[in-house]
Image (cartoon, rainbow, N blue to C red):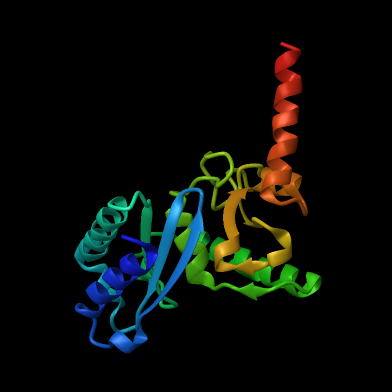
Length: 209
């Protein structure tokens, strides 16, 4: 089953659940981890697609994964909306919610300063944090949404919003969350450039052991 077929399956399934199918949109992006289908619905239908305790959304993911597996495709499905479901569930405390918003505002300022694209919203950042299971995209280490030590000016493990390819800016398919220390090191490099330097550093230090 190809991407078009999986998308059609997801769309038809969601259409059978919601009251207003015209509000459904599906964004598709691919990465080394597989193909991500991001589903948006009208604000009055978000609860229906998520379901009690997330059961409907979970069933949708299982269905799409099974369909993709038939064609050797790893499929991920996320249901998002500008009315953030995570807020409704009160999953994050006020300080954590504030840091997500702060990351969004800081990215907007950087985009304006550098004249690069900016097309993300609060829901996208929370969604990415969930998708990455609260871990750094590059290292897999746990991210601190709020600084572990408020008296420490720079927490190396603090959550930081990064562009995989700087020139493409802050668009949904080009952003990840990573450790502050990694983002500071990465600067304007793309992922491959940074990983090449890291591998050289590792190679040199291992040879000295």
